[in-house]
Length: 386
Image (cartoon, rainbow, N blue to C red; front, top):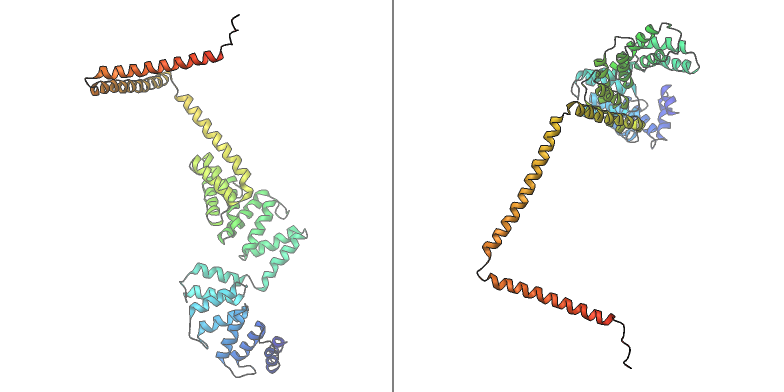
């Protein structure tokens, strides 16, 4: 009721309703607006700032915009482009057109940020696409889902010529699927689809890069160019992290199409695709199995080509030489042991020898006595003499 009264310029009535809702962000924004403009109350920027701040803390988009404008122009507060930028960013997250516009102008003129024409153009493009003419997109979407594909395509093509990224992608999608009779020639359809995929890709539409790569690879709508196809797949892989683009790069490296043949790099891209999407696990597993089989087959073929009897003789000679050196070193070590033993022996060697013989003889006697006692115990008892 407060907002309606304010639109009808019944500011006293609006003030009454907004005072009843000062704990609500909408009521706080209304009170801030009345004090900011001096409608029904004395103009008071400090009060307006306080109410807008309370509303923004509760996520009110219009309050965020007003705070951004106040800090940008220095009305009621000291100019602070950094705070203005923060509030405009917050409002833009809710899709506020004026927030996009102010952000675009700040980036265009380098106010509070480094000047960046590309960022400014993207922000202002959001503003341009949010006009009433954007309703045509919704009409085209509805026509497509009702089955009026040709009518939807005509609308999308008109909007695509006006620079609408979504319209460019949708028109290319319909032409690519061959769902329309509006353009009967397949060659003409592919050419038109290629142009729109290229335009959508230039505006940052992720899936368009992958489709451009396909068109360059198969020569649809343009001359076949594997090198350019690989470049488009590379952009889709690096920027959009598209698993299909990663898989395609692996395939091209495996076969050496558009890129230098490199089996290890092919495996790397296959593994990247598997990491990027669970749906790619089975295809990449099969591709890696094929790749490993191919590598082993190539090794066996190369080994068979290089194999000769001279190589076999050289291998046997190397084996024989290595074992000869090994046994010779062992025999030398044993000889050195006996030489060292002989050098360390004293003149009383006969005493040591007799001691060893006595120990051996004692062991033999002890073992023999043990065996005799065991035999007597196991012998059957003798019958008594009669």
